Image (cartoon, one colour):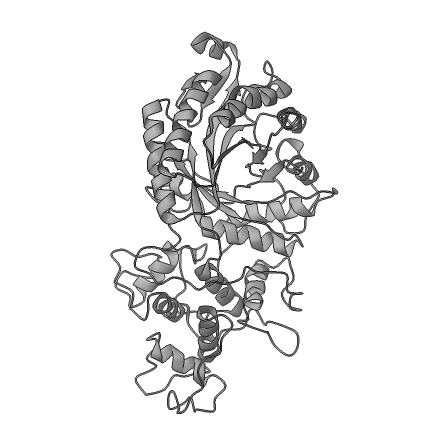
Length: 506
């Protein structure tokens, strides 16, 4: 079993900035190009509410399995070694058939065996050598530790995993033969182990778990662009950071590119007026740095110009984001929404170089200070301006996490239907925060809630770069896959073109 539904709190962010984001670590073989999961009609034993529905649908989409003649997938059944061979070949070589055997692959795998070609391919590519008795043991179940070794070698051109310096799970000591491969699975977010802190290395791999392992390994998410918490008021730092980030992103060939600059709350409170003499923002992160809107525009102009200078001709969208927290008693929502356009986004759009599109953004969450009505008023006031575009990038705090539950309430009395309406609209794109499975299920429920329109889901936002510690956030690939699967299971055709990960500003 793979523990996908991790109902854990999101821990506080730390100020370590990851220098780069990559889809795979240097030195590893690239995973094949595969199709995302699409609704398959499902098997009679894998309903859409199953946590593995999307993973099994992905297997079908890529021709890796057709299931059984009884119409089932047999998700809990163990994977045999011969079936593992077929799964691995088809995952690595989508749409092809392994070369036919002309001789037995092992003494217990004759040339006319249904799986001889797949098993022989494993040997040729150094994924397995079989057993010391000269056999492959094709009908034996695959253990979780053997699966880790198979998948590591598949990804690394037949090389064995290096040894471990520390234990990745409580039941996988550093001296274990399989420790390196299992640690790699964990580092790549292919597995999170069990809630008891173990990996259960000797247990057999179930067919549904194998579907999830292969799906996450193939990682069919788009290239990852960097988003950023803005926590500095130094223009020179921002300009340097903009140029450095652009150079890194250009080298990684991220396309299309979406960079969210997450600013902080708008305010015109008495304290703000005493500090800087005008309405503006409090930068995110508890730094207590307060800027007027004019100061913010100067700061972000330096960033945009630095970015454009390093990535000349790049087609990039930069979203300038506030949030729905802060004081709404003296600074009304419609004025906040209007000001975000007039005082911040529009001035930045006017100075943006060719190839750079500036749009607005708002982190709207039921757990923040704004009521649902205030959030809707903010959105309406912002979008009332000609040419205004808006990305909403919040989370669905407190909303139902049981797949298919489209009613009930979220934090502060919000409902899934209200969030659906808020995140919908012709000028609005949804970039939900997906750090764990519960959040993906929440957004699937929101998509299925009552209402004639559906949010335009354009991607996912994670925080693995900003967290600086394991467990704070899924990787961008894992979050993207989870949302795609959840929306597919909900009957929504996703248009997820972005995977963006938040980092801390220099």
